[in-house]
Image 1 (cartoon, rainbow, N blue to C red):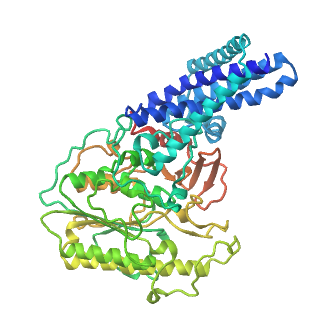
Image 2: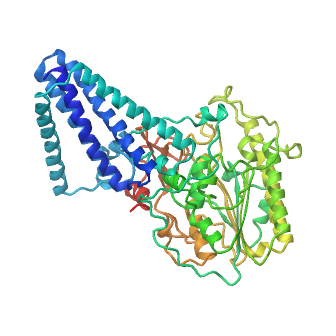
Image 3: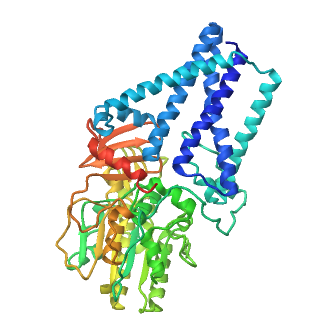
Length: 597
């Protein structure tokens, strides 16, 4: 085999890989609108040929040894690439995510047999498949030896591919900036795809996306809910109010830090869940898991389709009045394109220079809403307080001293966290006053007993607790970043708590749909959770960051990194030799495909 034959071999493999790529779209669903079809075409050709070119480049140095060695190198690189794509397609069809070194470590690790159970017949089939792949690559190399392209034809082919590759990246960058669902929903279909994005740079240059939303994709396999909701509303339906506090740690609910809310704990209708975990260690994942009661892995699909959670959509469909008052912007993160996509006249942001000022503005606007509220219709409310995230508070809340904002350039793992923790506690003390103000207003207007109030945090906040120089969140899955308070005011139920069994954000939607909306569907139809007051042991906790997923059983964590790593820790972020239970890992992985056909 000569060097020009390698180009022929690479070109043939490229088309073969593209044919295999159709299997990914057969699984995820082809999008039939013009933009969706155009992107699918350039995505497959631009991305899959990249695998072929890389394999060809790796083989070229073996030409220095001899023609036969070069041919063998082509067969090996092509066979390994094709085998990877075939196995990845198998994994994707089952779990809707791609193979990574972390998955391989799980497979070959001590727990592999428990997580991936294959029969003898399947192993024989795999062996035959591997032989077939490498035999096919050998035949392809023999075919490539019979023909060679001229230098001009090679340059032309490479030029056409570069044009397609550039089109695919440019189309994705445009589609992401203008939120074209049929383009951005394809981002995760093919393995190792990292198309170009220019959102930040374009906004800095003064460009803004179009205001009118595009229509949802014409096709796809996202199936949510799995069955239509069957609900019988109460004659006098209850209001629902979700009160979320940014970066709220579970261990700050004390009489010293939060005296008002601690006093409310003595009331018989306030239910306190002391072992509650968020579905994420960052805002997007935490809020998404709370409203959708499903893993953050679904974020892109729901955002692309602007498909709200049934927790919100059913409320709107049955006449609930939306009362959405967030301190921070609801278009950053883009909650206005998923959770609240169908809320009319959505209030996107609050007024004020400081976070605590914007919190007060959100609370004031909610109070104005209640002043003009028509009690003939129930309301669905959401208040998101932001002050603890940045340690923001007015002077009257400086209770703990010395207090100082974190300067991330100066802190290290041996830095004393006391002044920074004091700053955070002061902000939580301020949030406590805002929570008291909201509850008191509901009570004064005789609305509290007819309102289900859910108080929790989107995630926790670490302040060098593990002494590994972690300050904030989205950096690990230790309890300081994931363990948040959960309190539920329900006047129809007398507390038997505090409740100490494990609960998760995924348990919120089943609570509201069953007990407030009167839905008889099994929680599996719309969530991965369990009704909140059901003490049945949860087999695992699933927590996400922007790039990682953690499965927790007991105090053991197995962390899977989409970029290739797998790590095991306990809840204090100390390395562990065991990690999560293998059977629980297998069950958790299955949730990533639960809402796809």
